[in-house]
Image 1 (spheres, rainbow over the protein chains, first blue to last red):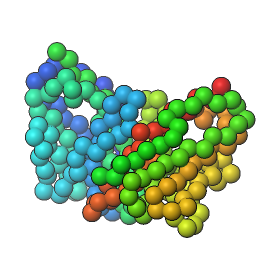
Image 2: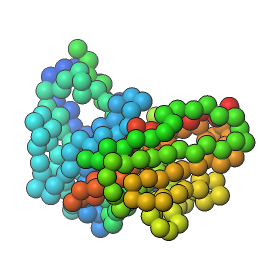
Image 3: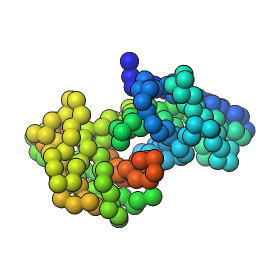
Image 4: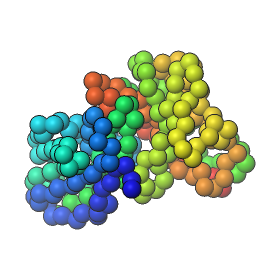
Length: 108
Length: 114
């Protein structure tokens, strides 16, 4: 079993749609959680951290469920510019593990 | 967040040769990492570059193939030795920073081995 698993997609959605990604992790001792965005031929960039209480940044909402060991990312009112691959990341003791990424394409 | 640069940004190399990739950070950081990412695939951690001691390698990666230097807190190099076409990939360095040890990535080095 992989340490961090994501649905690879692709997710193809129209502009304005709401889309959600989930990510499960196997290490129950994981301490911090993140979502990264990676555009084609670019490096991953930190999108947002995921806090236990859930957190929101504009159209993006991240949630953590420790009991079920998964994190989620919700994107509301999708824009064309949201098209990218979204990677979840789970950190133990400075031991970051990345999911394989979920590809999102937002279409006009 | 830290500003990270990598050199070269890309290279095409012949099999059997070696390439050294440099990673420079604009501030002192404790933890630096080297990853590999093949097209359409996830990030694979190669090793953690430790300042003042040998790098810590992940399973499947060995020092003879991927020697790493970390002479100070702002710089590291990764060498891909005796290259074969299977080494063709993007190599990224990253640094750990912030209260939650989030990682920030360099722009990557795109390596093609012919």
